[in-house]
Length: 288
Figure 1 (cartoon, rainbow, N blue to C red):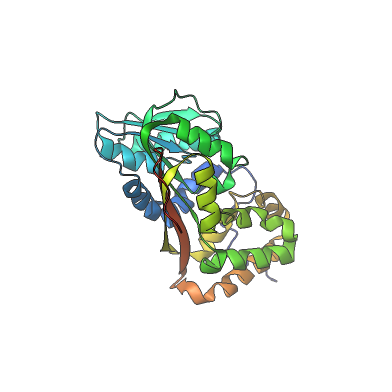
Figure 2: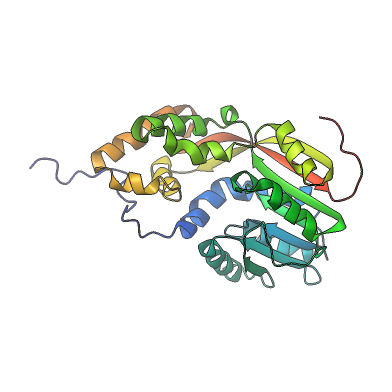
């Protein structure tokens, strides 16, 4: 009867372009990468009861939700993002988890709706590298901090220490051309610690500290994860337009190249990140 009943293992993800990227982000990206980074970021920022905390580029709100449980009823948590879909999902997640009192703002980070000095701490998880105007964004973060305020942010480290980045870029270049890898390369665009330090120092921050770390990104099914992961990126439209057989070959190529990091049916991929802390005071920054 031919192979009409044979379907690709990737076809369970429907590429009709009507999915909600923000829901997908919360379901797949947050538990795979962001949850594990969140506690480190909150600790680095010195978040504690009664603090006034701003989560910049909050996405679906994992940092704000966790910080809210620490600052308690006498603290303040605000969160901003330019993506309204992310904010909608963030609010739903907070409600589902019984987290109350978070202030959600739809705003560009370069012009936030706050007075100067409203916050003790600004947190930014894996956002700075994607801002078109990083300098102005950092200046705005400093503006809303108190004179003794703290900035804590993290960015992805060197791509060679996050092997999935190279694999994805190689395969996508083969199928779509080098331009298709821009966003993945942008994710690691602040992986030079000295350049990162200089950028933050030029925005007026001091006492800058940068710590590198490795996390293991895990998901129980690589076959399930890959289509969902790519669906949140601009490349999704091109993937959706591919014939199913070609799309399957592409995914299989990625899986083959990630074989060294398989964990049963899923994966366990090391990912490097940098956590930076800085202050708004005038103390001199230590050397690298």
